[in-house]
Length: 388
Ligand SMILES: C[S@@+](CC[C@H](N)C(=O)[O-])C[C@H]1O[C@@H](n2cnc3c(N)ncnc32)[C@H](O)[C@@H]1O
Image (cartoon, rainbow, N blue to C red; front, side, top):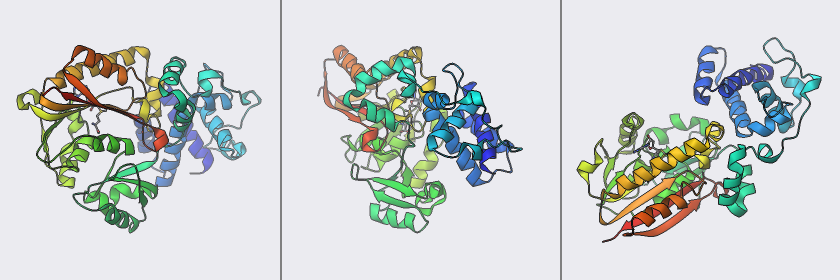
């Protein structure tokens, strides 16, 4: 495919996403229907779509669209202009490409929250919660997230993992923030077929996710529940740090489908449970709760545009319910860890303050924020200890 064909594909996919289709579903449907597209074309089209979604409001303006008229064509035109590439090379009027640019598609300038690529209602809370970091974090959310790996130290040292990856053309170097983390600078698309990945030496995991797990008071022999385990990223990371009696639960068991395979690959034993109360008490319960996902909007930019005040309120209620339930499963002196990938204090510090107000017998040991300015996603961790 030439650039005009890639632009046309991205325009079609973006129009579907703007019409309410989930981004991954729209990309997969296009991929299935486009057998002629090679792997480089697919990667290029995906990049166009995700780059456009991260800066949707400002790019639509740059592509000439009025604020209430965002469309795929304006987004891709704005993106090509923002990249400083020759617009005529993409909008050439080629048989499989978009029509040449018209006079009424002159660039406009976005203002206010649109210039920041935020929904209007989120600018004020994010300004308050990110404080001095606001501008830098908002700018970071427009960039692609770096790729991080977690080294399974039970299988190999970081140095050995780096060498195994290098032998397959993947360049990675240790990240100073967490002793398990590698940052990948070349060859990221080869990871899932690499020997180091297939043999359980490395897993794909964000830097801040690794930092959250590294901050937990894990020790050999502890009885630990991952209460919102999902695909098990943090379950496996915990198992990599200590020899635990490990249990995983998720409200939606389907979400844990991959966990058994991943655990086998990593050589880890974990028991999945639909009824964690029956296995209580635990020494530590991790609740990596469902949240706005604002800290990971670089990876899931569609989430930024889908969040509404009503959904945020609903999430806060779910989070409070999970805290309430998890707290009952800890032994006296046990640890309750609460994590979100959110920047919003309503989901973080305020949620923990409300819990503590209702439960005086708990001590707050840690309240930590991790920021994209450190490399990984935005994350929050609160570590509470139950009275002995
Ligand atoms: C942020 S994700 C977890 C990601 C996972 N810990 C990881 O590191 O890969 C939140 C998970 O919480 C689950 N969940 C939602 N409501 C829940 C509830 N009331 N109790 C337990 N899990 C819930 C969701 O199904 C989802 O898998």
